[in-house]
Length: 170
Image 1: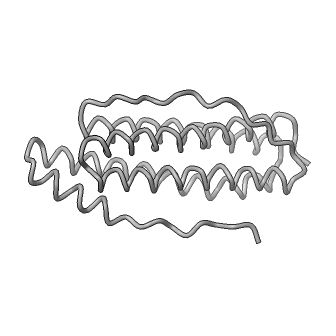
Image 2: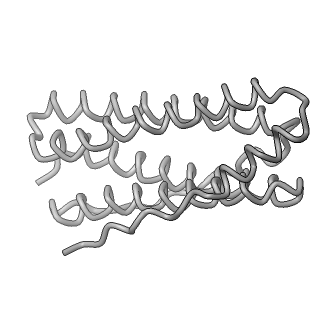
């Protein structure tokens, strides 16, 4: 059984993951209207990945007898100055998610909630990858600078990202 504190924090994390999905969808929309379909694709895939993360937490709560309480999702940022600013916002967002996951892990640790700790280990590893991917994109966009050809090549590269197989309950 989940403690009340861990259950509340898991509900908050579900909300944050769904808000992340929403934020990435807004970023995808920005890229769609900016004629950068590859970057839009990358953000769409990221949006779906965040939804899968929320469902992983959702399933953990259900499996542990917790009560999922869905909360309102705030409207994400809709306007960006450049592709670089979009990925900088994505990195900042991922850093905030990392801190939330780390806090949740500490809470589970304090509650001797070993099952949640094991589940959260996956998220901790995932966040290393998420931050690295955003940082790499930022570095590439900085290298491209104002070179339209380089930007279009990056857009094509981002467009090659394929959807990861959804993890389903077994």
